[in-house]
Length: 228
Image (cartoon, rainbow, N blue to C red; front, side):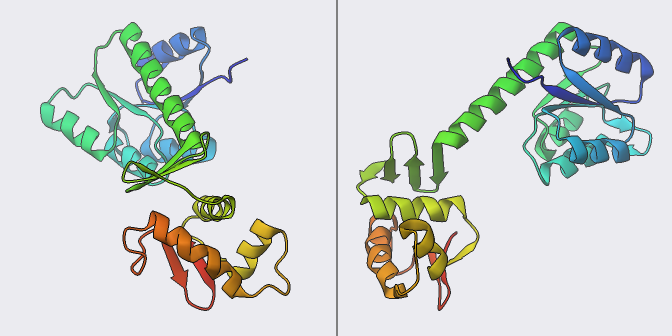
């Protein structure tokens, strides 16, 4: 059974809130209502809804602030539903990070279709993130165990592949020699850090355009490695 999707309604007009609430309940969406910028940000951070329906004219500020605060931490679809019909307003909202813009008055059927489209896009993106990793010229297809650089396949040994996946899974973090050895081989005691360099050097030659000036696997001298 599919998990019920949740929608955060950010709106202060009680009639529109009622209209949206009835429609979302009929479509089996879970929903919460925020009537201000402050409440919207708080509810979003606490509950992480699947979609946000956002009015721009709120009692305590501009809905643009809600978009900006959401984009600081998440790619959740934001559909603006506003009476502001000026092109400049639409451009400003989309540039701030909104995914779609619907002007009031609106047809509920159209809004529901836009919500479904946003959810499909999110689900597709989530599936792709689970099966593929891309960073500039480097692409790793986890399902096929295939590594590509600039579109061409590179052949890694099983150990090199395991090291690469470990670094990617912890990208941005410095992994010590001891940690990598233990994760890859199951032990690290009595093993010299030079052992790891024996595998790291050819891995770099295969995935870095310039191994002497690596862009992906960075050496933290005396500590370990970091995937940038």
